[in-house]
Length: 453
Image 1: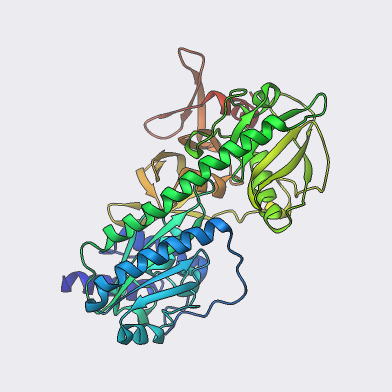
Image 2: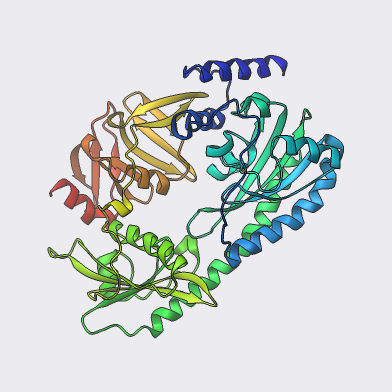
């Protein structure tokens, strides 16, 4: 154990000096270090986390999760009191809202601002239990020198985030921290159970929101010659009429009530606009937007109207009219309002080593649950990014295209196009194995347009 600690500390010291040698460091920690150094530029010699500033509005859904975690945290706190431990609950901004533990440990934690109103996101305090859990989609354990900031090396922390069922964005995070003491083996189980209980309530609310959106669709009065659909706040299609289904690549009049059943829209520009509309409508409930987008069936841009759907003051999603134009105009999909910084390299992991891949090296990406695998000339690497949706969004302006619910392809690495037995498209990439990537029916029009075929 001691030699393992020394190996991590030695890697931390090398990494602080600008090297990328992270031998002996767990992949999720190495990836977090890379974010802290290259992206967030966190000072590794901070002695305490900064204080959170500004007012944060929490929705009813957020308040429900925070209340649930607060009750669970209080029940867990007595289990770690004899271990120099405390339990904290923070919101999605990393702002600690409450902490539980014995008086002496709480006082020691306050020296590092591990206390209410301290900000523990990765970009504020580096690699730590709460901040790294907000970046990840599973419980995380950060021990000793795995913390980015040297002042926190005496702590062992474990955190888990609770995420919005529809958007996947974090809502809250629960964390257990022990001073110079190992966490009990059951700590991650406690955290997992807490997250599962909070997530269960969110699942029920998401189901109810799907019912409400389907009802709003049924009651919607579409102008003559327009198509109508109901989408959730992430742009997933809940239900669409026959004309909208052709444009969006979904089945007509089939309600997808539960979030894991909802349809991916075949119009990526529309999905981006909907996400913008969700953020705008949350601030301005009376907002109605309009824009124009290109679809794969028409040569001319199609007018679009977006009208938010609120129930009891909560934004559930939007009604979309294709062929009608009314209200304020959101930024165009290629405009500055939705601009993203193009990544220069992708962080990947293989055999406990962190690898920095240039974008041209990557032929395609394949999802396996929350894990994403990157296929290159040097073989397969696990991506540092969790979830294919997030990777697709990062690479959307870098020459990559979503061609299937499980695949994103580098367009510059496509060399051949084949047809399967049922007429489906298969993309052959130019790596050594000449691997093929399937194209789903709903993504085929976008692929043909991108390749000019």
